Amino acid sequence: MIDQDTYPELTPGTVPMNGMRLRPQSNYVNVLVLRELKSHAVFTTNGEDADIATVPVAGGDYSPGLMFMRKQTGSDRRTAKALQRALGLFDDGEDACTMQVNEMCQDCPDCILYGSAASSGEEELSITSRVMYDTAYTIRDASVIIDEKFQNAPGDDYAKSAEATIREPDFFEPGTLFPSVITLRDTTPAEVAFVLGITKRNKRYGATTSRLGRVDNRILGVYVGREEGPSNLELTRGAIKRLDDSWESVVRSDTLSADTVETHVTETFEDAIDDDGLALERVSDGTVEELIETATDSDFKRVLAAQREHSRALLDEARD
Ligand SMILES: [Zn+2]
Image 1 (tube, rainbow, N blue to C red):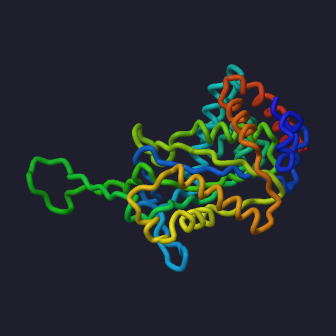
Image 2 (image 1 turned 135 degrees about the vertical axis):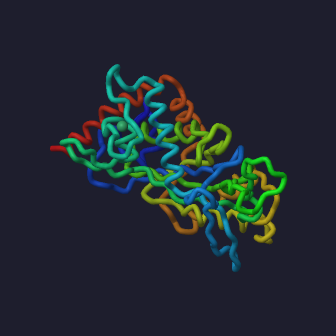
Image 3 (image 1 turned 60 degrees about the vertical axis):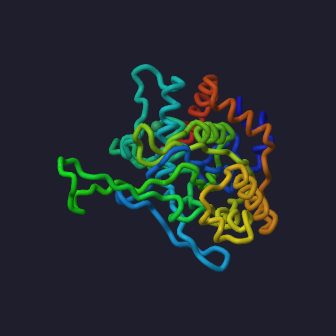
């Protein structure tokens, strides 16, 4: 079983399974991740243009590509619900939950952890998410990681007017890196394992067609305590400054080694803890590996089923 007594290292940032409360407390688990694109991917809001920002870095500025938090949450929740079904968490004939905003079951670990809107049913409740995501920024500039692709409209003519070309959405190049933190608040050790398992299993983000959006989530560390760690933007900027004395050559480089970036992102996170005196401790790698192993095993059903009972009890408390 996964709880504070079996994983005491998690105690500073979690609540015990039988200690879930409606009132927010200050228990945080920060999961540090480097998302690496393994194929082309599409991250767009208007269906065409890649989402891009302009942000200051080291006295200048650059234009990173963005992965908005909604893209991360939506994809992770689909993975979470699919995992619950695959593990056989739901009884025969039981509602196996959906991604429909107002039709979520509010009765599974995913709904009670990631939140859900009040349904149209009798027992109106809206559940606040205890998993927080943040927009993620690429380390390199849009000019080197984003491809604009044009495709000729179908037709027999050898020459076509400009209007006849079809604008395809912008593609992010494979190898693009997004430093990201997932922050859990007042979660149980079993819920932490659930999120780690989802992060490890989920290999697809953004517009979903069969060959696009493959992502490898590298879990760099888990930090527990009374506070949130640095933001994604701080992490990205910190890593850029550490990679080379010339930040401009970093953001415009043709390739970047994910292994090297891993090290610099981790150091940026840990230096921020020291510099700002944050009450956060790193969980040992052995423990993190064990949690991931358990959460990606078929036996995880038992953990999730136990968690479900306690999650339900929390909601019952809200309904009273
Ligand atoms: Zn549900």
